[in-house]
Length: 277
Ligand SMILES: [Zn+2]
Ligand SMILES: [Zn+2]
Image (cartoon, rainbow, N blue to C red; front, side, top):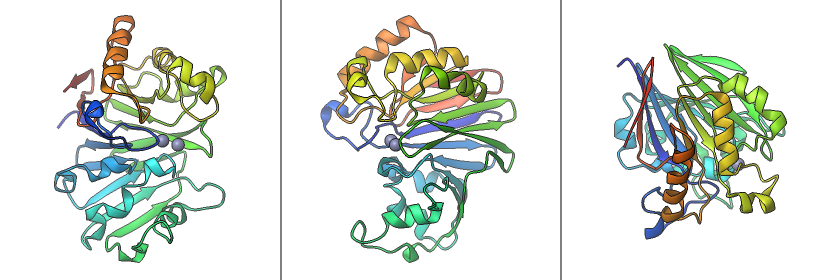
């Protein structure tokens, strides 16, 4: 495989959402499957981690999980991901130490009373927990990271493999003064997955909650020169009808941008980016 395969497994933000008016974009919270060469990387562990067939789709029982931050919509799938109960599974888990709490401590908090009945010791897989360094390698994949503005902090990841680059930046409230640094980090990427939770009206009453309005996210994507942008972290109550209308309006203003849907399969080729699905 020359290109990178990216599959969106959860694009809902803050809370899972359900019902027929959310069936098109899906109600699963943040999770993305990234595959390049022999490597499999999962980005975030929201309820999308429980996507049907995902355990079977992992090419081997060794993979990497990159977590942006430990807000519950990004880790709630962790305690029930079936590969973690397999002794032949091994996983490197990256989550930035925050408030003096390591990656392991943050995830074990979720699996502790009164929040969860099964202790972390029940997980049979070989799990190796890591703080998030500025840059590191996963096999042939170069990973660069950046802290983005979000209450409590969040990590954006840039994954580069051969001539491809994918940036995952959800839960980011980038103000004007943050954009130059973000563009240096994400500039020219083949695929940008970017937070766009709010309408303009919602943002007026949600400023400081750590997410961006749609039009501003589109402007950030334009300034970054991302070849393709997929907007994620849709508000829980956002309906398909609203997202489809916004999607259409946005695409009339700007090429190569759209709202992500759970189940979307994206292929990032070395010299160009094709979106399908
Ligand atoms: Zn979130
Ligand atoms: Zn968050």
